[in-house]
Length: 325
Image (cartoon, rainbow, N blue to C red; front, side, top):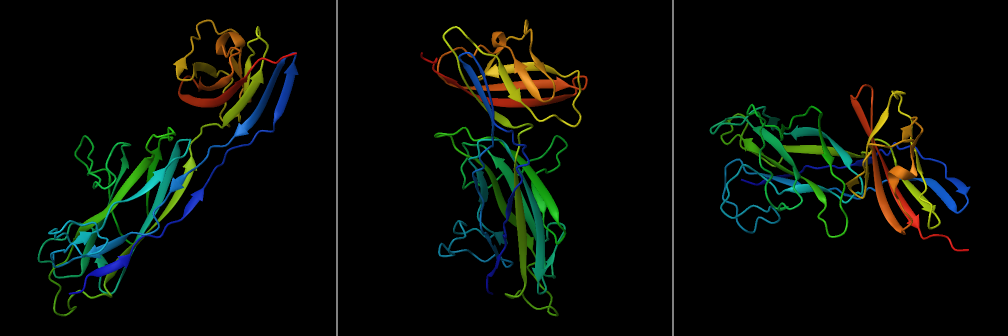
């Protein structure tokens, strides 16, 4: 019996940025200058090009020389392959969606449930187990099956010739030596082991395949903005962060939280703090950027529509050393 091998993964990636750009704007007041420009997220993704399945209907022993399968000697699985991954080193959170479509040829057919021993057709129950990997997890480990509170499996897709979709939200990469985020996937399943005499045994023409088309989109409710200012030793300038006005903007919107480099700012007496849909105005008494040179990350959280919706604005603030005369 020949092992049946088919190329199963066809990949394409579409980058849908969809982020409005802002025209550069420069204002000067004495020694204060503020430059506002758009800062687009950088997507750094690694997608698998191919993956190979070995169908082993008769549960033959796999030798170490079964090249490239990653299957341990002695395993007798009917559907065998290795873990493949989507990896991200993007500096923003990304949404990954996948369109999954299976195909069969010859006498092979997709089964909708586990194929029992002694089955006489040429049915293949092909599944895709997927998991957003923990940054510390072993890439070679098989993604575990997960269940919800009711005991329903939540991360196993049964492959068929109908188009199906999957989606994941991947956190932003922390940079430096931090491990990138991953989506780990592996095919599995069972197949018939006793084909009828009429159809004959399994042959190389009986194959299953699967195409997966990925689309990657950065998740930024509104764009990150780069802000640079320079002040004298006594001036702590206010910040103005340009925003894209949401179609459902409410005039009753309020700034509900601000953090600078991960530290929350007390908004108890934040007089002058406002958002009109087109820009956030943060008075100097609130931001406390100071005059020390360096880069600070400011995240502004807004709540509107009677508290039911929130948006976050993110600014990378570069503070220049005080100007000299």
